[in-house]
Length: 115
Length: 108
Image 1 (cartoon, one colour):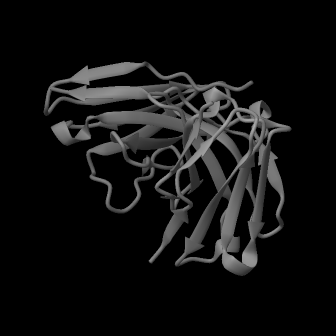
Image 2 (tube, rainbow over the protein chains, first blue to last red):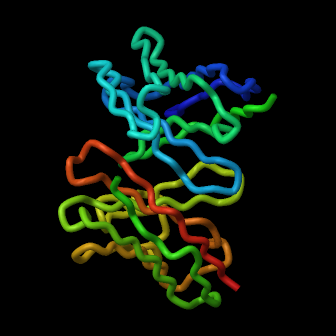
């Protein structure tokens, strides 16, 4: 079955880091860029960046430069997104996704940042 | 930074045609994609590369692009089409993806 399975919800304190995983199955992991997109409560979709699972090359949205790191482990077909120096406005659902056709999205991981 | 602009809301009666626009300076050279997102669910791609429809998406969904504006058209909108719709594309470099702010479609 073609799917992306994300790690579970996280609660973090301001200033901490969070690392979300995204395990791909049913397709060639290295064949498609993996994007990370987040959505704050009641807000729109916000693109964070992508990783090329084949080369490990990354491209981050300017807003997240210096705070986000995207990595992958091809041996287990898993992508990771780590966001550091968390703030309350980082509270959001974080999605991994193949955004172009054929599109494929994970179910999302809720990250709550609260003291 | 590059932006895509959508109207915040569009409202139609069932059976009418709904049109949602997306404007961006790079659209003459870059494809537009359209996502549908219903409450509490992950987005679903309904149009890719301006006008192509993924399998499983009803024929009433269509897309077009002209100049700096892309348009998602829902011909004969149904109540189940109520959702938020997002366009997305890349900037002129092709490296950075950007989503429009989203349009809430109401069908009632």
